[in-house]
Length: 245
Image (cartoon, helix red, strand yellow):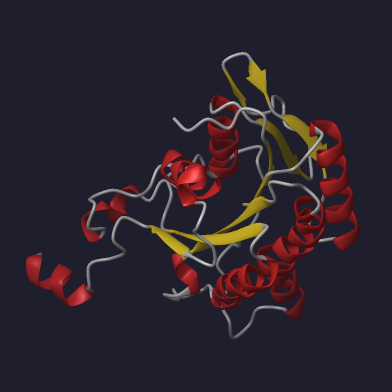
């Protein structure tokens, strides 16, 4: 377990699922943690006797995103790590989906990470030790699936945004991307996918959290603009699945 004692992390969408696992991992490593969401959870993520602090925010709003970062930095006294985890989308038919749906998907999965990253960068640039930003992406950004047109476009944009920000904000602030495959959470089991994933199972939330600890830690001090694939090897091509079965 890396040591994040004395450091402070903000995890968007950190009250449940992958975000909660990320928050718990940073807490367990010694960091102070703030999580955000639109509604306060019954109990924020905790590890041992340490608990994350919660700040309500809709990160699709640039104003609320800026306030979130300001509040988090004030509560913790600094900001060393931002994990842009908030995201997602239900499937929708591209031929009939409404413009409003598309706008909201792009707002959450592309614009919101930008809105939070901007003020976070301002805080980190002012710190002697800088900071690091991690954007949680999806295999949909590079491997589109039916029903995910808006989500795919937004996640593809997030990967490009990561690389652009890494160029502009180095050397003080490192910006990296995680391409996450199907992840087992309370809402999505993906148990039937084990046969087409080379590693034989979907990811656990902890797999993504472990990648965040690496990218935010000292072992990755020269890593920026990178895309770390946490997808178990992707998917076995359909022709091999058909032949095997």
